Length: 47
Image (cartoon, rainbow, N blue to C red):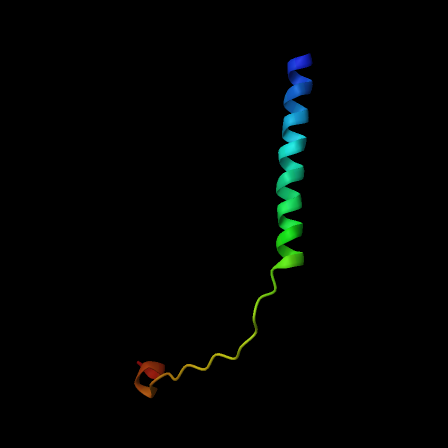
């Protein structure tokens, strides 16, 4: 039984680290917003 508890504790710690990493990404990384315009030739629209 102690081995099972150790496994659960390890999984909880790894899950907490992964969750903390996701939270840190959402807080510290701000994506830049820019408008993207791409011309499509008329021949590609109908062919």
